[in-house]
Image 1 (cartoon, rainbow, N blue to C red):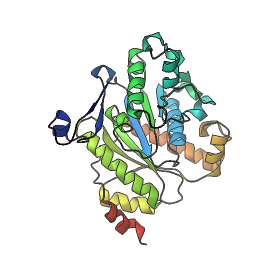
Image 2: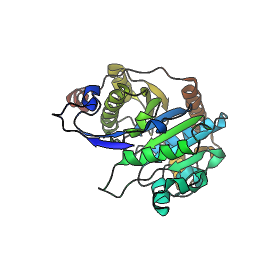
Image 3: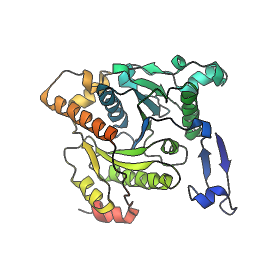
Image 4: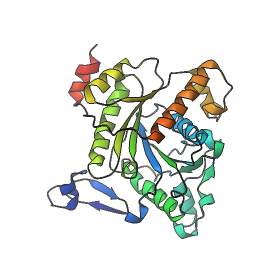
Length: 303
């Protein structure tokens, strides 16, 4: 993987492609291209429940008999916490331990098996203010390819930091088939979602990724998201309510599929299984049109 910086005034292939003109761009090596697995990149506003959603979705895929790999792309490396019951070593930590001689690593050095056989990887991140998160993602995917793990996997989920849409944290979109957004039924979540819609649209000009839809999370209703969807062309894939059992599952280091059964929890688990089956079957690509900031305020902000 290489990182190139081009001033906006200098003609370059980056500018002709229109993917982040004049900015620092992260390019993946051809050798780092993914195999035949279905790959999803999960984005959303910080604290909206992406890791909880990703982990339970990974379990749902595994319950359907799929071989699943979840890759956490947040420096706090807690994406797979409920799957493994611990904060596992990150790829960057492991690489640092061998002085970044990747050839010395084995898959078991950075992959841990979580609940129901889900393979778990935490990419980690560089120290604050010192590096690019996209580089970390690229190195992680390169390791997975070198050890043939993507070839032996049916589903890969990238759980990506917050709503950061810079070139670095948009790097998973260069591998994914679908970009999935997690959002609550409130203005701030929808504002962040709108930026992510724009980021996925930008990446789709040069990569295979397409917008898959939104997962409504931690919300009793969906009227605001429905209003946004109607105007932009986005669509809802699943809806999960704000239940205390979901909060408690995180505290118990457990996925929802390990919690004691109840009617409301059983319905949530069934919704995850429906979502996994829908994504596996294949969702149509969406060509949603992101709104300008002012238009979002006009649509949602002055009720």
